[in-house]
Image (cartoon, rainbow, N blue to C red; front, side, top):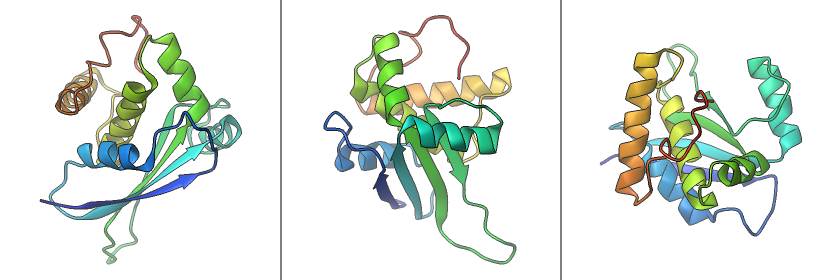
Length: 157
């Protein structure tokens, strides 16, 4: 079984944020590869999320999770999956809006981001169905509800 090393950076501190052990457990649950790797999970405020979202996605607002897959230069093999940047205030707000516990929404955002690091996306409907089915299964394995049952009929972020 492959091992995922999880480095955690907390730019925002709040006693309501998940602990390191939960963040690590969720990230490892989302790692679907058969090789060892490393990921950085960075918990940020709305300002940093907005800046990164604007710089890399052209959207001038904070967002729940940004995924930055590591792209090694040609001929270099380094076991890095990439970075996840999670905006804690956005995740808290979304959990309340979607009537989810903060814990289950955090678990979803970490797994969602981990799948993005591995090449999954939800741009096309068929790809979204595959990604969402995998998220639902992985979250169920951790004891969490289907994250898409409690949402409004909003399009997926």
